Amino acid sequence: MSDAFPVKSTAVSSQEIPEIITYRFENNTVYVKPLTDYEAAKALAIREFPCLAGQDIFFSLNTTTDDDKETHETRIAPEAWGAALRTLRTATSVVDVKVVELPTYRAEEKSVQRFRGSQAKRSGPGRRLSIGRVVKRLLCMN
Image (cartoon, rainbow, N blue to C red; front, side, top):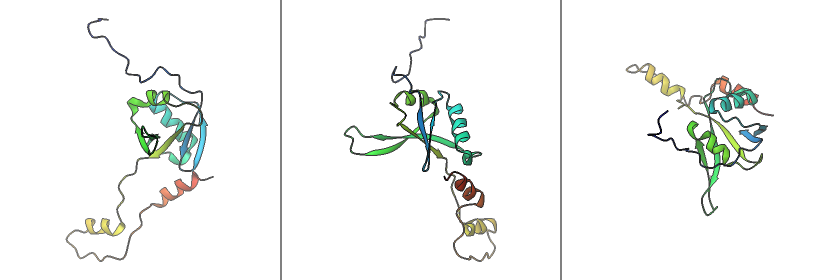
């Protein structure tokens, strides 16, 4: 291998990854052994929270500003997963598991789009959650 183009490490820190961390989905938490592979970590989250099966998920951390006055959610990109794990201190560090939300449309809007050009009669507000999504959310409740 040629040394003409040395590869530099992009790791933020050489700090070790904690032995266990906390995954949180909605109000449910579980201690897990952190996996450095992003896809394996997603599979672990789905195993621990079965209601996530078939869902597209991502991870995020609650981070604070430099002056510790504001907290905000920061999504973790797959390429940054390993480095993000090294920023966690203990099992009390929480990694939030989130579902990628697809846009929802009211039933009446779908009807209007489907029957464009016809005189589709509107009949009040439509449902925003499917029965399947409601059941999956109920499965995650303790």
